[in-house]
Length: 153
Image (cartoon, rainbow, N blue to C red; front, side, top):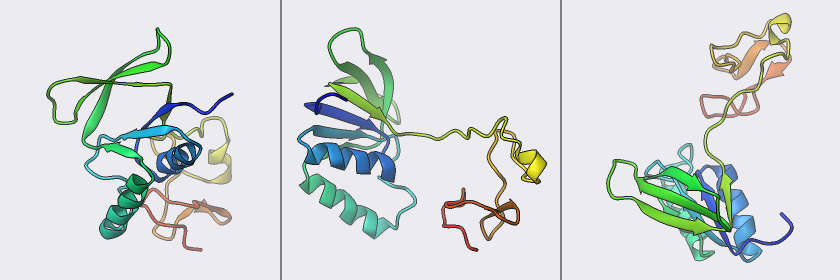
């Protein structure tokens, strides 16, 4: 970005989106986080999560939890998001200069030759992980496994 956005929307309340939102907030952006789930950072301890959200709210970050993005309109200046409650209901709009999408992850492992290393993948391309975080071959290890814990070497 060539300038600090006045209004920034972060879609997804995982640790990466919250970190980026916090940085932009400290630079002067008005930050709103839209999250489908009822809580931020689902892998975090519940009490720590509450305190973390309070700290971010003190930094003036706003949260719209249990909210889904239905559509995005980029035809005018900035971005216009259409939102609705995750359980369904009346739609609302939210306008911003910039939207940071930090929701969901997709593995990009096709063509890496993991099979030649003996690393097995599931049907969508994620490397299979043992309880110790190993990825199927001695030196290949997940830094942060799909089970939500660091790799145990």
